[in-house]
Image 1 (cartoon, rainbow, N blue to C red):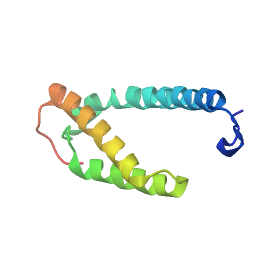
Image 2 (tube, rainbow, N blue to C red):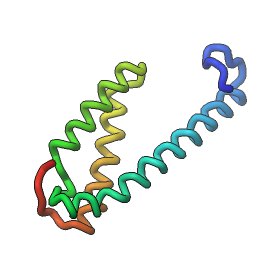
Image 3 (cartoon, helix red, strand yellow):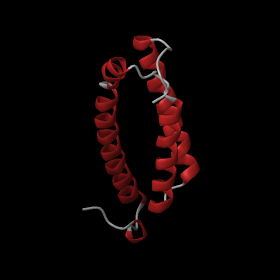
Length: 103
């Protein structure tokens, strides 16, 4: 169980706790990536474009709102997700090309 950050008294303990949080974040991001890796086949079957700009914007708005509610810097969350979206869209475009509907 992690301690509240304000109760940690040493840099060693703080760094250990941050490393633990980083490991949990990587695990969740790997799970997210596994889901995203299945998207191209679904998009192909539905005729959806790799980019799907309206969906990307909806994801960014959702992440921004969730970050604000959680006390996380919304601009940072939006930038992080924008980077992920751009990365995954580029990977999808390698498989799907650039055609398809914006859904």
